[in-house]
Length: 335
Image (cartoon, rainbow, N blue to C red; front, side, top):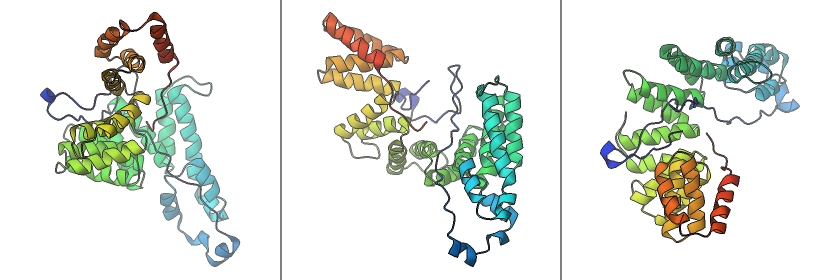
């Protein structure tokens, strides 16, 4: 995966926009959804006696619950018989969503079939599920059918789905005629809902002045929010903000801290730069481990530095460093 987000000076801005998919052969689904809904609490008996939930119109109830996952729908269906009947289409949509994912990824004993996956997602979308709309929109985008994709994203975004709002914003940025102001609007909505990918993308827009005025402090604030939410690319950019003093007060300690966080979560560029930092501090063994990880991830420049350090280590230390690299596992991230 190409992870560089802070280009060299010859490329203008140090930040680049988040791509919709990687070009390394393996599809990268950038439209991932966040787990943001807590379980619904069924009202007490006294509350139910005071409120007649069955009077809520079906169309209003379905709009309110369009973004719900299956557990929340099952709980909401217990409120009253009217809700149970009204939410049946959305419960069916969850089953269709499950089968769509099986067909898309070849799980559950079925062979991958992108057309069957799309059909399942579209049937779920027709029943009102924003989760199915987002997955169908992603397949359409990968097929090159951007208008169909954007239409589904917009429908789900208008129903309040933060993932769809983020996808819609990114889609507007990557369309043939970019709608930057419209993209900024949806990215703000998704970011304020706590969706870290949108926060990262919004930070890039603020840093580069895409669809809005350039605002480095505000960009750094959103980078930091996304980083604190576990988004590894944002961690890397936060480190650079501290290092260059762009939007944040210059702090070598904070820059090193965030660079290590990104490196420990598999960001190859961060592993390279963290390895260089360790080398400059005389931490040869640790430096070799991070430089080896970066090399394996495709950072060719890391290999040259690593080889220089290896010449200074004993054979025992070299073997130990390679063993540590072999057993290394990335910490979890939000993407």
